[in-house]
Each structure stands twice: as C-alpha cells, then as structure tokens.
Length: 248
Ligand code: XBP
Ligand code: MG
Image: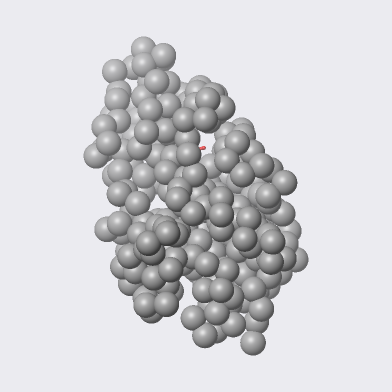
C-alpha cells in the first residue's frame, strides 16, 4: 500500500484561473503592440487552448491566418516574449488570484509532511512570480515549467521530470489538473490524477482522471462531476491519502 509522498499541481486553470482574463488579455495586448489586428475572443481562445504552450499557440494561429511557417515561427517568438512580459506584469499587480481552497490545501499538505510540486506548461518567467505572489516560493519543494522541458503536455515529460526531481515513483504521488492535455500528461507518466474543471475545460475528455470536481474545495463542499461521493468535501489531505493508499 503506497503512502502519499507528494501532490503535483498544474498551474493554469488548476491553482489559478489564469486563462480568460489573464493570458488571453496579454496575448491580445501583444498583438495590438505589434500592430496586428488579431484579437482572441473568449470563445476563440477556448478553442486555441487545445494547443499547449503560448508560443506554439500563436505560431499555429498565424499559420492558420496565412503566414508562412518561417514568418509564423519568427513572429510567434517575438509576440510570445512580449506577451510573457505583459502577463508577468499582470501577475505582479496581484490581478491573478488563486482558486478557492488552493492556498489552504497547499498549507495543509505541507503541515502533514506531504511534498508539494508544480508541473506546468507555462513559461517560468511568469510562473515563478505567480507562485511567489499567491503562495510564496517556499511553499513548493519542486517547480518544473514549460521552460524546463522540450516536449509539452499532453507529453508526460514535465511530470516525469517533476517525479525525478522529487525522487519518487508515480505511485507515491497524486496529480491535480484541469484539462484533457494535463490529465493525459499525468496519466501517461503513471500518476493518478484528480481533475478540477473550469469554464474552458468542463466539456473536455477527462476520462483518465479518477475523479472530476468543480473546484478544489469550498466550505459547503464541491460538486463531484464524476467519481466516488467521498470527494464531495473536495481535495482534502485525507481524501488524497485514501487515493494514494488505493482506497479512494
Ligand atoms: C497551460 C498552457 C500555457 C498557458 C500560457 O499550461 O498551455 O501555454 O496557456 O502560458 P498548464 P505560456 O495548464 O500546463 O499550466 O504562454 O507561458 O505558455
Ligand atoms: Mg492547466
């Protein structure tokens, strides 16, 4: 029977609702600053999110709008650098908040000796300031970002790297994700995964997750969209320990 040694959290959409009013706004500001007429609406951005990694997302979009592969690659690199700088600035204003229950769960895990880690596709230039602003960087044993691996989710590379840096086997940790790409990455790395959805990921295929919740935790409890009813209290240390022990 395995004991819970670590919980590995995704960032975007999981620890914080960063996409609609955060990343999307920064992408549009970068388009405007470059004199491009492109603007990603809330709906269109939801479709574009199936491509992980902001630079790749821009590059594919530019090619879909008729830019040559060479031009799209160069322009995407420039736009993504500007977007990242803008989003990091937004993070530093405190405009991006943690999802309900996130800070309490991280504190509770650490108080019980469970390691906490991050495995995200996002760029470290904004990930580290976001984690510092919301939790303090000392709240994390390990942070692996899209800047640290070449293959992005749904490839398992970021989870494999996080497990390696933790010195743990997949059975000793649980992953928490929000999206189909993220759940697939965690499961491909051999991890059991609990999904917490948001407006962009609610209708995605999260079948690899052991449970799907509508939030990390709330005082009145959460909605268990799929999975055993014991998750109704949300992501508690006890529920995560039961899952790691194979009884949850
Ligand atoms: C979500 C992503 C990222 C963000 C934008 O990452 O796919 O690309 O949308 O951040 P995760 P960047 O859910 O794995 O945290 O522009 O820095 O890629
Ligand atoms: Mg995510």
